[in-house]
Length: 474
Image (cartoon, rainbow, N blue to C red; front, side, top):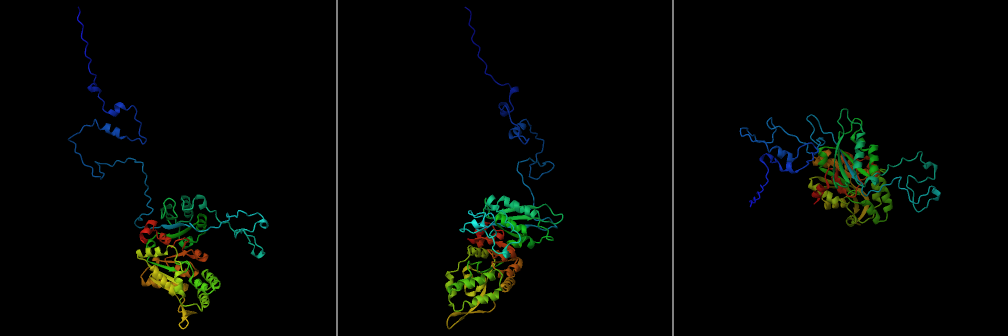
């Protein structure tokens, strides 16, 4: 019987040494997409050094971060972009800074009237138009030939903020930069560069500080002329903003003396009108006050005329008015913030010293000046006569100069804030004059216009952000 051969035991399969893979990735990854930037990935770098043999005879120098011939710098594109434009940097040796600061403040609550505001019920024929609503002043028909305009009134610019957002939009900034780039610059000056800071809300800012360089050529267009330029005025109307232009100097950011008018500036009312209302002559006094503030009347003579109408008022009227006057929104916080910055403050009032001094004490204002009205001790009634020098436009200017000299403050670091024509002289004497919700004449003549709800916005003109303002007023 033949022997049955035992089955042969199968050998365990194994890779030969010459078939061993250099990398698990190389063996099992069927396709490795190339890098988009043309550089190797980390796996390729690891594979590349696996077969590298270490040479103990080679000296290894530890890299200390300083490039050298033995450790040359290796530059690899990271995908990040950063441009060194030096817009706000220290100028090169032998050069000086030539930057203009434009603070754009959106007028959030300011009413605007444009020729696009047609009444809904307006008819093409004036005779058929309903009487329930009035036409805009620049569209109203005239009834006398002498009042008929010789040419059509220029149309107001289209309100672009209604189209692109009721805030300082990117298109608003672009429009302003285009305006500045159209102005003449010095021969050989560099291309216009700019940067901006949102001083309140970075998403929908209402206050933006824009820095542009170089400034327009002062030979053709001075800073004062630029502030009154027709293009600036039109831009303000288009975008419903106030544009405050200043040269970028260190003194701009650090005021040392701020002088205020009182009536309709740090308080909402006119004190002399309040007194007149108590005796029933408010209409006559208010009419004279309005004409004086608009520059139509000489302030000193009109003031004496108004004071004569107050004859017979009880002398304690000023104590009674303490509960009536309303400080302007934000003025308390503003004074507190200025004091923390080490700024001296003063108030010059064309009103009367009893209320002015009391208000200054309440707010913490350092200096207070106003007029004195005589009273009869026997009857305790006002006589209607002014005692001493009237605090008029010239007196306000002189007081500002006196305090600046006493405190040793350069005029470049003095700010004056007012609303009436009798404030213009002190505003022109200061380094910066700010028209606060002012009369039309003052708006046109002042270096800066601030038409806002809160007087605290004054701090933004110095370059302070909302966060910094809150730190100061705590």
